[in-house]
Amino acid sequence: MTAAVVLAGSRRVSSLSLSSLAMLLVATLAVASVPAGAEETTVEWTVTDGDTLTSLSSNLLVSPQAWREVARLNRLPDPAYVVPGQVLRIPLRLVKSTAIEARVLSVVGDVRAGGNPVTEGSPLPEGQALQTGAGSSAVVQLGDGSRVQLPPSSLAEVVANRQYGAAPGAVPVGAGSASGPTASWFAGALRVLRGSIEVFATKVLRAKPLEVTTPTAVVGVRGTHYRVTVGEAAAQPTRSEVLEGLVRFERADRVFGADLAAGYGATIDTAVPAPIVKRLPGAPNLSAVPARFERPLVRFELPGETLAVRVQVAQDSAFLKLVSDQRVPAGTDVRIAGLEDGNWFLRARRVKASELEGFDATRPFVLKARPEPPATLTPRASGKQTAGTVQFAWAQNTEARDARLQVAEDAAFTRLVLDKDRIAEASQALPMVTPGTYYWRMASVRANGDHGPFGDPLSFELRPQPEPPKGGLDPDGKGIVVRWSGRPQDRQRVQFARDIGFTQLVAEEEIAQPEWSFTRPAEHGGYFFRYRTVEPDGFVSDWSSPLTIEIPLDWNPLLLLVPLILVL
Image (cartoon, rainbow, N blue to C red; front, side):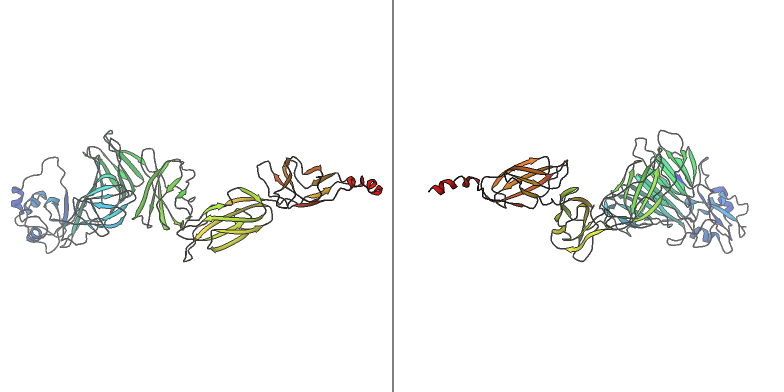
């Protein structure tokens, strides 16, 4: 079973004028009849002054003998007598026609006809199929000015693209009857073999509706905006959604059909006898989509959407140059990859459970994701270090080696500590003595001054510098006591050494309080003490500044020798 789409409405035809029809009576007897029950496509011609049978036969009809059937069909009682305004019906098959090449208006990506790449302006003759690859699209213009858009991964064929009546190049007249040597009708037909097409049919005088056929349906129109899609299921479902105008949607054998008004759609497949007509969903709300994206992967949410959404991206606001076409399940982030920096246009429509797609919502956006920011090295995200000199380091972007560094006290970067541009090195040292949480981010800068977007901000925490310890010999001179400020939950690592480099350690241990007492060493001279704090989260502070402790000579043992010296 095959399907087709046809514009609903009355069959309009054009007018012919004849001033002499002397031989039409004979035609009434000589012409063979059309088989009973057959639908004969006809056009109308209105008689005007100056028309003759000769001009009709030579300028409009396929042969000099065709007038006989015209006379019989119109039941002329006196073929020699016609008056201006008289309307004659003429079978379309008797009217001269000329095939017109369709033209490819736009091409994005990999678009082929007959296996060969096509470019903008390429002709597309009757019987030629056009195929778009993934991430590719094309727009074809038919002889009457109608436009047919093929989104990515689609295949369609121009079955017919013909002008009837006037010589090729004559402009088809508008809806209504036609007359005169330049009057013409248009007849076109398309076949969708895979994917979908979107049709913008012009309102011109047609010999018959512009038809779109699929394996399961026939769609016919005279002037409207609609979509036709061939599903991939075994039943080969065909969907049609009407956005403007009126469409006749029929099963391929034309046994069952339905008229689709604007705002309605239907599906036909091999499993159902007649189209299932349903109202199309309204356009989704795109107000939450940002106007600017700064990452190569364009990613956003559509909050509140309960239906799947078809999302398309184009280079132009008319969506003639589609570069991306995807269906996104309800509640899923939209992710679009492969776009270059620049201005883009987003189009989205809801998809019902019946697969019918609704009205479009559109929104422009800007992508500025390059040059990409450098890869940050230090300080690490959520890292901690002691206040002092902070070393920022990153891996340079080979495309843009210069960098811009911002450091701030807040995540919104309104309280900047540093904003340095055009840094040629891959590191930067910054004195920072005030404890607290800070944020930093980077951007790459090209040689021509083009700044890329900032990377995601990273945070780090500066812990206070250890306070200098205080203490020395206790009052009786027998021990040493050292104290400093500290929190009860912290542990302390202490070192006591003979040298300021702490290579000659005398004592080292970890204690639970910010105070340390021990017996004075036996040897006199200079000693050094320092500590560092180990916090519960594992952070270890820098060493404190060294405390110098001078151990004096102990004279008590020497006093025992005084009596001996006196005796001597």
